[in-house]
Length: 235
View 1 (tube, one colour):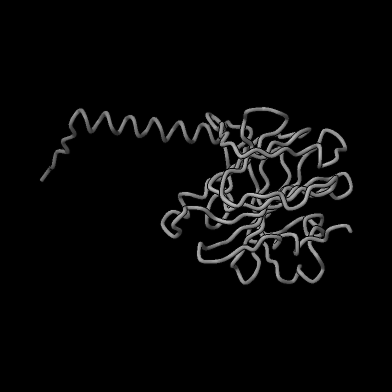
View 2 (view 1 turned 90 degrees about the horizontal axis):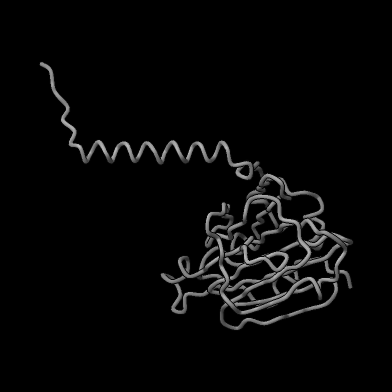
């Protein structure tokens, strides 16, 4: 017995559109020069060197992600998995004092249209723009409650917030290179829809690192200065 498969013109049109978008996605991944990445569980020695000797055994690498044209983004687990720490080494155009390199605003300035980002983080995604990002100035836009500057000097700029959104722009551009929005992850667990975060810009020699610390579950806590207590800061 033979069966005939009947497909309406609307079903056929839907299948054609679906195949088109699948083909487009495959094409873009194969032809986007910034999409390539390598993933592993090993952090560079210079990333480990940021942490105090007694803290290193309490850290473990969740993932190390290297996007094309960029230094690795490394995500560490800390405090029995209650906290995570993310580290990214920046590519600088010169030797700068962090006090003049980093500026802070409380505005929401996301500009991600048409750009490719890769998310990292267990509770809320921190999104990193793909492609080459060379830095001569950093704008941090940090919106949330209890936002404060903890330290600002030539080798360390350090902020804390119960944030609902943050973004980072380089070189006075309006293009967002790093961003996160905590609301989607937190709104079901917290009344105010915000999560704690430490954001640190740290200079070691001529190298500058972004170091982020937050919680892996909305029920966990992050105290002010907690990230600072992990870092081998030059006194």
